[in-house]
Length: 307
Image (cartoon, rainbow, N blue to C red):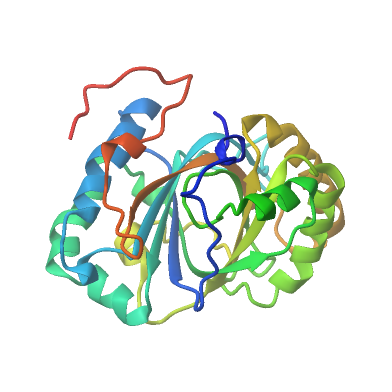
């Protein structure tokens, strides 16, 4: 799938936006429930669940912005203390939900609204393996990256917030398995940046950190499940040129982990390679639309799941 960099020249619709105040972000990495093909899962997630989430006119009954990041490849750590070459019991992800909220008040009003508790939440039973959901709350932090492709991104005015990029999402579990990422991020970011700048000059055009925060305002597990899953404090989002950039990123990943593994739990951490699909964006007056659903060459044609 071509990246937006390939399409950017001459486009007047792409612009760079810096948030004056970071939105609160809820991240949920999902594995599909039994009985669904990958295509069926993705069709239901975007076409049906996406439409349900954006249906209310009341802005407090839905997120400020919603991105579904759909996975085309991944790499996970080995099970600590397990048999030879054993994967984690929770191995595998199909997509990542990214929900943005104006503030904590908006989070609470949305998740406690009659619409979300009666319509949106119960719809999750149609697609999610609740036991293995991986969830955190975070703030986005835009990070500098000095690659040739990043220079081109700045010149062309590409926006990392537009929700239609090829990305690597690197889920970091700290050695303490907490959810606060503020202390660990300054240690890991320079190491990751250096590794990307060494191997990915023509393959990475942006870098962002989702810095985990703990909150006593909202019990994530009560809504999303995954109470017994590992905890994650950081999610790095690396913006790739296209699918063919994955091997170069993997070189960077190995280099980064060689120098940083003492600072985090390498066994629980993992990377998802994915395509973003913007479901809705209140700030830009973008509503749910079927024509923004992603298509993957290895998943052709429609399924029996229709809105």
